[in-house]
Length: 302
Image (tube, rainbow, N blue to C red; front, side, top):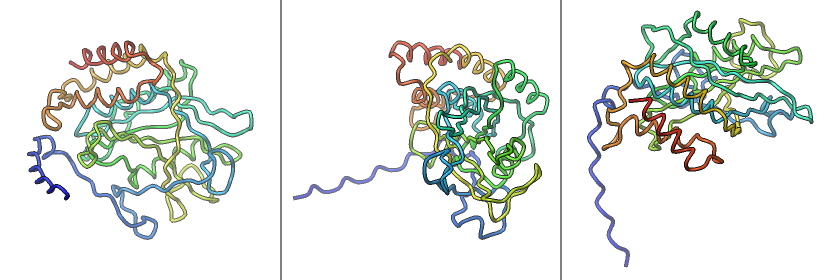
């Protein structure tokens, strides 16, 4: 005989943070069939075929993202649970021996944001900070190959505004052969609809089909919101550089960061951050190296 099912546990009382967090609705129908509204979230579609192969419907280039880059994006997103953050991605655009284009993302470069009336669901880069960051990127021998921002408490799915910004960036880097090697990332650390302790990190691109356009090209009904297929490059020598950036981020958001606040049960926001970052460290690191990095991060965030 089958044992009787256990009575479901009563739902936990939501924390004060959960009650106050901003909310955004995900549009359920295909966006191209309806009028566009700036903050509507647009479900992503998938490319087919091998990235960079040139096959019909395939992703235009391969994408590799370093562990260090993911760690910095993750921590930056966690630092503000009510307002969006933003930064640039530095790396290189290369060709494989077979001639396939690959965007290699080496580092995340946090940028100060401009506070706006709706900065819980919208974010803009501070122009002076962006100039400084691009100079640091050049000093490191890298070029800008993308940007990232956060959706603090809603899914890591691009909005119409996100897609518009991404398309404009793509047009700015458009090469003679039509390649637009620029990617976008969204980190979502505090989405209550996602049970995992790790933040959600997604990458997207705007597929405009065969249409060409100038630098001011706007979204139209030929454009599609596409998820990018990415691979992780396990660079291991990023600890010092990442800690330097995290220290800077902590100084920016020190007054806003409330790591001791409860997430769920007895789990704090800092507990969630450390768990998420742990999932992004190189798999080849020894237990001792992982522990050293996480202990250093824990002390830095006090």
